[in-house]
Image 1 (cartoon, rainbow, N blue to C red):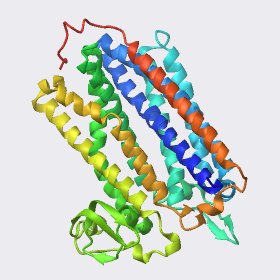
Image 2 (spheres, one colour):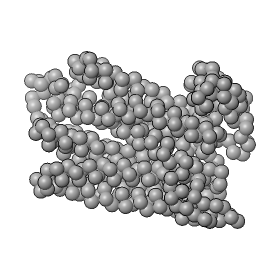
Image 3 (cartoon, rainbow, N blue to C red):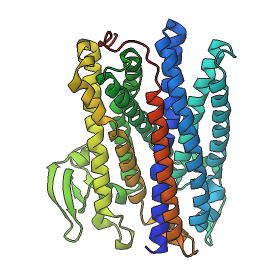
Image 4 (cartoon, rainbow, N blue to C red):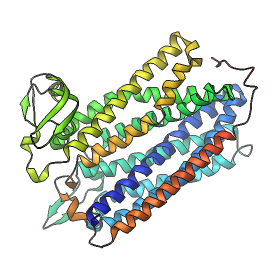
Amino acid sequence: MDDFLAARSQMALSLGFHIIYACIGMVMPFFMAVSHYRWLKTDDDNFKNITKAWSKGVAIFFATGAVSGTMLSFELGLLWPNFMEHAGPVFGMPFSLEGTAFFIEAIALGFFLYGWDRFNRWFHWFTGVVVGISGLASGILVVSANAWMNSPAGFDVQNGEFVNVDPMAAMFNEAWFTQALHMTLAAFAATGFAVAGVHAFMIMRKQNVAFHARAFKIAASFGAVAALLQPLSGDLSAKDVAVRQPAKLAAMEAHFHTEASAPLIIGGLPDEANKKVDYAIKLPGMLSFLVHGNFTGVVEGLDKIPAEELPPVTVTHFAFQIMVGIGMFLVLVSLLYFGTLWRKKSWLNNRLFLWLFIIATPLGFLAVEAGWVVTEVGRQPWIIYGIMRTSDAVTPMPGIAYSFYLFTAIYVSLSVLVIFLLYRQIKMVPVLYDAKKESQIPS
């Protein structure tokens, strides 16, 4: 493995693991706050126990997210020194604000974990809300920095130097809102379905049904609402990408030829050598409609992109298809879930219905990973779009491959530890009721 590939692989590995920890860490506090609120309003001890159980999960992912995030911050400087030298002063503001949000989150989490029976009940609940808000702000600020890489703003380039820096313009670049919105909804959908799937599995096993049923409804509701909103944010993101990064959109759709009434491609195997897509379903005019709002607009293809600036088409297209395919499946499950709550509550105890959520448990995070592949791989060969190439930003230090192997071992070990801790937490859920006597899910 050459050093350039090793540096990119290490960054991809680190981001791939960290994004899961970060998504759960920024979303779970909101589940916890809702459960806590329900306990304060109803005095149902099931909600209190759910809150305590979820708070331990929040603590686990806060710790692992802090570790993996710290490793990422070091990697930026060690693996991409040329990038940080030029770009650091421009987008340093969102990173510094992210650090502030992280400290607030840490303090609020400490108050929450050790505040049981020590603080006023509503102040204690409020500290949990602060954990969620600060964690969400932290995630959005990091995404803002990534959006800047896709839509650089807030500086001028003179003689290879970044001058006339405007940190606010850099932070609120043209891509930040659509990218932050899409990522936030993805985090809620992925975490909601993952948590709901775990509780659905425990319901199906008839273990502590009242506890898991209430937890399932909270998580599934968050996940379903986010999943239903996600296609709308995806449409906004695609329209934005079509304007700013036509090469990325063309790679996402494997759209080789510039044409009017461009078809939307579903599936298929891109043949980059012959510039075509085999075995695809083509919907005439639909890509033009999604980009321009009409069925006759011209959509720029890969044939308009210089050869040295073409992104990896096959990887980007497959990742995009995986993301969209999973997203549509979660939309269907969400519609079924809300339909069940409205007309068929008895289905909440149906094994096939529960199996849908069990199957969906990992899918949201697979979609998140695929989405980040689209974002990062689709931007290549640029690390700062149109300004700096990835190959010009990498460290000249040799032996990066050994660092990649070491970090791989660290992240795998960290993930095994997290799985073990979560498994132990689930097993430690108190037996609230006799499962044999309570086999039905409460309304």
